[in-house]
Image (cartoon, rainbow, N blue to C red; front, side, top):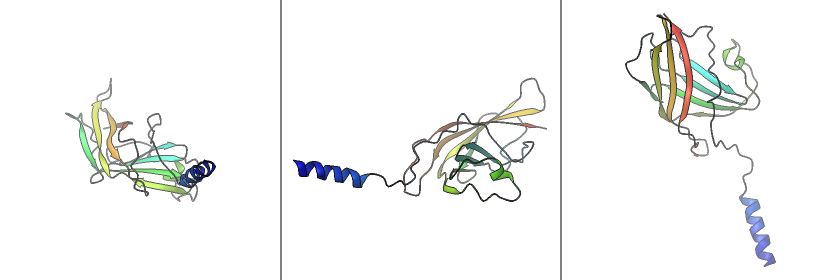
Amino acid sequence: MKNLTVLCFLALFYSCNDGDLQIETIDFDSVGINTCESTVTTSSTIFFKLNNKESLILELQSGVLKNEISSGVITSLVPSQSKVTYRVFSDNVSSAYFCDDIPTTTPLVIEEIEAEDGEILITTTLAEGTTDTFEHAIELSGITFITSQDERITDLRISEFGTLTTSE
């Protein structure tokens, strides 16, 4: 019996993770959208969300944002039309990492995963009380990330990416 206990303990000890990075969920719902531009326009395509040591980067296909009310949901497919990238950094990251003319050398990117499937859903409405300001509500649906260890990240729907405002 004593040998069986030792054997079970050793099996458990050797089967434990050796510290490889494991991403179980991606949660950026409570984080605002950032961009490097002072004013978002219909030609803007790069947006990102920062959450301490993580970032979620959205690269929209050109021309998908329009200063007109959409008749329904506009869909952009990932990765063929738009791109979603998840990055894990060695330390907290700021917008300067993405926006400085000379890129910073820290923090280091520990892991970068590009979405292999999903959709970007955009609904454009006229901002309340205006005639020339448009709000673009962006959602990510069915986003699938596969890690370098061939593991699927469990969050397949990241609800709201956020709302962008453009003017004519």
